[in-house]
Amino acid sequence: MKRVVVGLSGGVDSSVAAYLLKEAGYDVIGLFMKNWHDESVILDAECPWIEDSNDAMLVAQKLGIPFQVIDLSKEYKDRIVDYMFSEYAAGRTPNPDVLCNREIKFDTFLKAAMNLGADYVATGHYCQKSEIEVDGKTVFQLKAGADANKDQSYFLCQVNQDQLSKALFPIGHLQKSEVRAIAMEQELVTAEKKDSQGLCFVGKIRLPDFLQQQLKPKKGSIIELGRDVITGVENDSSIETISEPHRFEAQMGTVVGEHRGAHYFTIGQRKGLDVGGKALPLFVVGTDTTENLIYTGQGDDHPALYRKGLRVPKGEMHWIREDLMLKDGESRPYLARIRYRQALEPATLTYQNDVLYVIFDNPQRGVAPGQFVAWYDGDELIGSGVIH
Image (cartoon, rainbow, N blue to C red; front, side, top):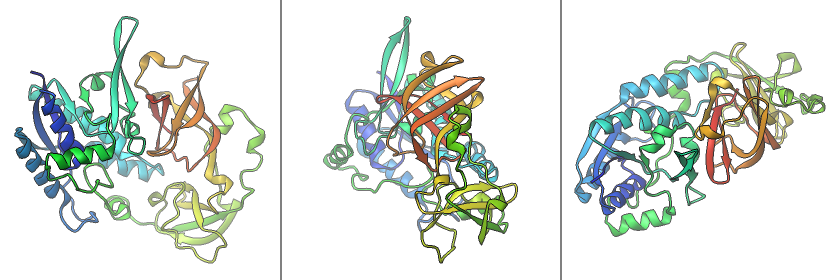
C-alpha cells in the first residue's frame, strides 16, 4: 500500500483531499504545518493557526488517519519572511505564496514526509498532474485545475520535476462546489469553513504593520506624473526597449503629498496614498527606494501603469518542462500571466544573451519587479521567472 502524507491545513480542500486518498486505498497520514508565531499583525482576533490545527485534527479523527503537527516556523522565517523583507526593502513586490510552495510545502515538508516513509505528498491545490514520455524519459506535467475560478497552478510555478514526481493533487479535477458537497456528505467539520485569505499559512495580515517589524517608516515625496511621461518609448519596438521598466526622475512631475516609506508601496496600488482633490484616483506607477520617492498617475488607464514587455535574467528562469527550454536566439508563443487569477494573455518568449524576454500582445497593467511571470501551453504550466 502506497503511503501519502497530506498537508492538512484545517481547510475544506485539504480535508477532502485526505478523504479521497483514503477512499482510493492509500495509507494516509495528516500533517499540519505550524509556520507562524507572531499574532501581532494578524487581522483575525483569534489565533488562526490554533483553530486551523484543531480543525485539521478533527478531520483526521473523523477519517481515522494518524495526525501530527510539525513546527516549520524557523524554516518559514528564514526562507519566506526574511525574503519578503529584503524584497520590499529593495523596492520589489514578492509573492510569498509561490515561494512557500517551492521552499516549504514541496521541500521542507516533502522531506519530513519522506522521513515518515511516504511515497507521495498531497495538497488541496486546484491543479492537476499528468505524465508523458519524452525521449524515453517520464516527464511530469503540471496543469490547471478543472475549476477555472479556483485554478492554483500559478502558485506552483516554481516546482521542479523531482517535486512533481512525488506530488498528488486529489481535488484538481473537481469544482469547488463538488469539494464542498463531498465534505458535507462526509460531515467534515471544515465543510462550510470559509477559504483562507492572505499570506500562505499565516492568514490575513496588516502588511504595513508586518513590514514595519523590519522596515522602519521614512517620510518622502509623492510625485504625480503627467500622461505624456513615457511618450516616445513606443517608437522603439526592440524587445530590449519594450521590456525595460519605466524610469522616472523627480523633476518629471509635481510633488502632491507625502508618504511614510517607498518600500511599503507597489506598482498599481491605489490605497494608502491619502492624496485628495484629484479629478481621478491616483495610482502608484513607480517606486524608488534609494531616493524614497513614490511616482503616481491619475486614472486606471495612465500610460505609466502599463508595460508591453518584461525580462527575466537567466538565474531567475525556471522551466518545469526542462525539455522545452528555449535555446539562445529562439522564440516561442505562449500564454502568460503575471499574477494569480489574471486571465492568460498571449505573449512571445525570446531567449537571447542570457535574458528571457516576455513580450505581450497587449500591454499589461501593474507589472512589478519581484513578481513571478508564468507561461503556459494551453492548460499546462511550462515555466516561470522573477520579473526584473
